[in-house]
Image 1: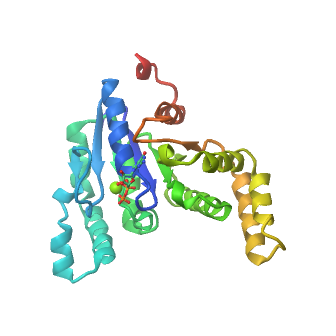
Image 2: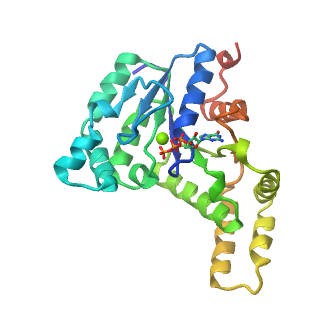
Length: 259
Ligand SMILES: Nc1nc2c(ncn2[C@@H]2O[C@H](COP(=O)(O)OP(=O)(O)OP(=O)(O)O)[C@@H](O)[C@H]2O)c(=O)[nH]1
Ligand SMILES: [Mg+2]
């Protein structure tokens, strides 16, 4: 492994934009002439907008697995993750051969596969252990239209952080399609947990589920979960520099980013 090795894990719910962000960040590092590579961990993906340097589809053929084990699509993804975990030494050898300084790791759509099953956690810990890892958790804006959704997804992000123990930056993806009104709500929820609480309270008499929501928000506030939450757009490049600056902060400032 190179002395400086920064694995960056893309995490998030299905369709949140992990793959497109992998491509955008790859271009960003490449333009700065930094030594960057990509690793696709999604055995089920059909087409990628980047050309992965390392690709688990070379190890696992999801269609063969589905037929051989007579599995449904989710079962096949679980089996593929287990199979990848058994081949993790091959992936490590490929990384050692390529010697990237920055490795962008695109994870499969179903977050529970990667963050909650032991095979996913094993893969992440092995890829992280020899470098200075960071992770980006993407929140799909369509899931955070209401305060309940916003709090729940932040809790998911916190839970993933707890599972994987990776330094984590949380972003709201696809900022280019967030309507002005939604952005204003999001900004007010990010800036002040009290606004979130009052949005939940505004529904009328406090019932059990609202009380649960308020307790969740207090927990999120306690751990400063909205601290660095930023909207980004992989399509337009909006806030990508800020995202890199947050990654940089995890690693310690590096002058060559801005040469
Ligand atoms: N408008 C907009 N659309 C985006 C952006 N990023 C991703 N998308 C779209 O969102 C959809 C899902 O993007 P992906 O990058 O495949 O998401 P993913 O998280 O990798 O998806 P899975 O791996 O299937 O879970 C695609 O239709 C993308 O074109 C963005 O910044 N803006
Ligand atoms: Mg993807």
